[in-house]
Image (cartoon, rainbow, N blue to C red; front, side, top):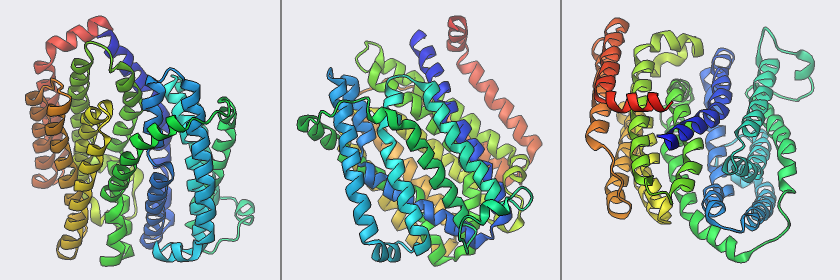
Length: 476
């Protein structure tokens, strides 16, 4: 239990470093939806869809590879130096190519040429800071990590308010930029914030001696390229809907869908916070005797917390929604929220289960699983968006992540058996889903009934886990 206590402590610290900035950043949804019409908000979404693809390609799995080999390699400085040199050189080359072919690339990606340079600038900088941030995480420096993340989001929020807000905006600051479309202010704010972060992490580029080891690079690339392909598949799973919707249903619908999709951010933030603490922990703890038992316990409590999060957001969505989205034109896609929340919970469980192929160096399986999910997403969206509209996107996400979760569990039993408490996990997942969907869809978001269901679920958890919870509390 001492190990779990340390894990949860680290997860909370790293979680705050990710959740707090993103939660603050999420508050910008209210500003953006108040200021931008649906069509402009759709443009903002499409911009960051392309940015997500660029980020995966430009980092080519190097972050996870760095975790793996920095943790197990005795010559840690050589791993750091090789990874750093590789990322810097490849980013420089990619940057030249992206600018040289900016016209055909921007046309293929349907990105406004005025936005394209900002897009490339943001993604190049974000690629350069990947290894410094990974180094902070793997060497256990959460305070430094959190401080830089908070500075980044503070700059983004401040500039968004000054550039976009009708009440607190600064005409003097706006006059510095020649902007015809006010959505461009969002991208300018992001670029400036990313540049400041790069300045703050520059010292870490000089921590490693210029020692390039081809052998280490080969290991990093062999381990990382399937992760890159899996990352591309994940971006398809997460973002293809927001890419296809404007073409099939129009920018107005995509703006509403994208805004309501953001209401699932609470589950996304929980998963991201968990991964920040879990990934280094899983690698560093893999050689311990009780490793598999610890992994099993972690997944069970991850599911419990995720299921609670699902129910809380669904039950109190009418309380939370006005805080982030007020304009009625964005609310026509609100019914996707419970489905997207459940889909992201399945994705979080999948990330837990994926430790088997990362620890056994079978990252190609992660690639195969993600490609299956991507194929489902592509096929389902193309076939069903014309028939049932934006709801097809939510269903596609749920089916893809649910199937990925099941496949990973089945394969993990063969290659890296972990004694997961499947019956308990299934009980929590099924009951929380039933309670949430009954409350939202059958009883039209009845808060009183939802609260009763929520209390019943908590009581069930306390009853089933009472012995283990007492032990954890005693240790604490």
